[in-house]
Amino acid sequence: MPALLYNVHMDTRSSEYKTIDEYMKAFPQDVQIVLEKVRKVIKEAAPDAVEAISYGMPTFKLNGKNMVHFAGWRKHIGFYPTPSGTETFQKELSPYKAAKGSVQFPLDEPIPFDLIRKITLFRLREIEDRKKR
Image (cartoon, rainbow, N blue to C red; front, side, top):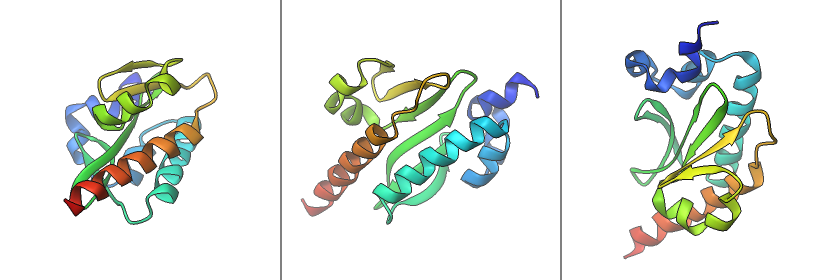
């Protein structure tokens, strides 16, 4: 399988993906399994969130706002919970390569699904709180 498929969301053809299912099918089976688990964790934490493709990657939106994104890469799963998500969980994310609003979970290590759930719940509350103001 061409390496390009590991970086699907960065490819100019990424706009061809209309659903998360289409996006994930471009990856090898072992990566698809991890992506599907990430998706499931997010859906369980935020059942009212809407699935979309935004910025060329799987996205969950709540009240029209991007809540979290995730993406497959050659050696990691990217998780993009916005800067507030990474700042709030800076201590828990410290073992991983992170930047403002993003974190990389290596595919050759256990994916911290509980942490993904916690961050998703944080983003859910953050968006809901903003709506109440």
